[in-house]
Amino acid sequence: MLAHRVEHFVESVIRDMTRLSLKHNAINLAQGFPDFPAPWELKRAASSAIMDDYNQYSITWGAKDLRDEISRKAREYNHIEADPDSEVTVTCGSTEAMMASMLALLNEGDEVVVFEPFYENYGPDAAVSGAVPRFVPLTDDNSIDGDVLASVFNKKTRALILNTPNNPCGKVFRKDELKLIADMCIDYDVIAVTDEIYEYILYDNKKHISIASLDEMKDRTITISGFSKTYSVTGWRIGYALAEKTLTSAIRKVHDFLTVGAPAPLQHACVSALRFSESYYEELAGMYDGKRKLLYNALIKAGFKCSLPEGAYYILADIPEGTGMDDTAFARYMVSEVGVAAVPGSSFYRSEAGKHKVRFTFSKKDETLMEAARRLEGLSI
Ligand code: GLN
Image 1 (cartoon, rainbow, N blue to C red):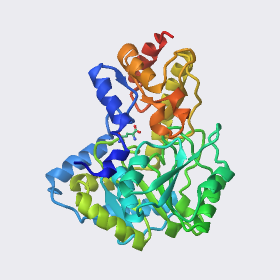
Image 2 (spheres, rainbow, N blue to C red):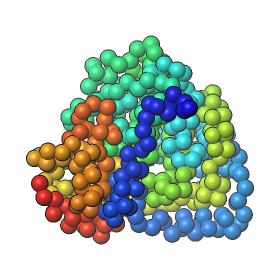
Image 3 (spheres, rainbow, N blue to C red):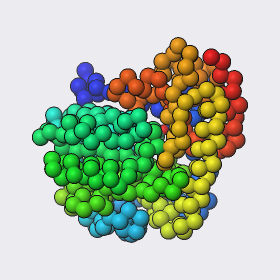
């Protein structure tokens, strides 16, 4: 006997591809995590935190010194004022922040607006909360069609999920687009729940804008981010949610009973991450820019159709014509015969559009990407 809530989603395909990749000894360009070392200073801070005995529970909603630093970073980088004592919650990764927020916000039958393509977790997040996702496809050039957006809002709409920079397509939402979304949220009294985990991974002078910084949006936005991608520590599971007091106290209640708290010594180390100098972020984006071009060139050479992403560290590519395979068959063929793992596009779409696509990550060492490029040259279709 199982609960109905687990019938409406399947296990993560991204994580499944990682398991398949290990089984076939393939290069894992499926799951987005670095295969290169985390910053040395950060590792040293974590080791010291353990040796200095930061080994017991921190305050359930986050260590005070970390909340203070997150609040400062939010003011300086995101232009969001978040009181560290009542508006910041530290969670086990942004994944938990997103789930805790949805559980805190949504009732059975409420509707949640989600742009397509979307990160795999949002569907299950909505399903577990009892909510119904309403998908808004981005146009072919990754823009928002205002009429389509307006058509999904109604009196049942309670929340909208905004992921910028976007995983999987790399779109960075522009100010005018955020304004359009904000106007809809204000008109329908909807809360925006954002996933800004790739906020520092931007290319070609793109700028990250947090929708909470727009007029009238601060009190109707839950801004979510974390340390995994910016500091290459995806296994630490440290994320956070910024929201006005009433929302925050609801999120904190869910968070407390789900996890008690995020790992205390790693929270302590994350304080030092937030004190890295400006050059760290420039180097991070510069490093990923090189990797982006390396993977892009390899994919084009191998016959994929794709474009350079504006942000994040993925390329969503059209499967070369003539394979006769859908995305799942093609991804399985790639992992077992070519030795490169990617994620089937249908993980990111409700519509059929994903059936012709696969997603690759370039969050890997150059040598890993070059070996993947070599293997892709042998793609016989
Ligand atoms: N965000 C990463 C991805 O999209 C990792 C997902 C995960 O497994 N948590 O690949």
